[in-house]
Length: 103
Image (tube, rainbow, N blue to C red; front, side, top):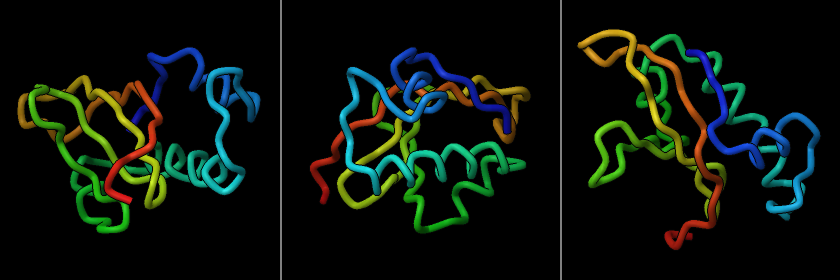
């Protein structure tokens, strides 16, 4: 699936490996890069749901907003602009990287 960034600070983090807004541990940064690569490699939404390690889920209260696990304490949030009415493929827009209270 195609990946783009709605958050310019996250794009800066991805492109340059650092950002003024996001001061995150190196292990989280490494996993952040890995998660973006996994999103790009996914052929369909089902590829993301199949990987239990990602804990990919739809966020309650939003029509096209999802999140996945970066590690136990961090989550990556995104919006998907669907290519078809079946909602199988689409363009992923990265919106936020945040600490998650579940860890």
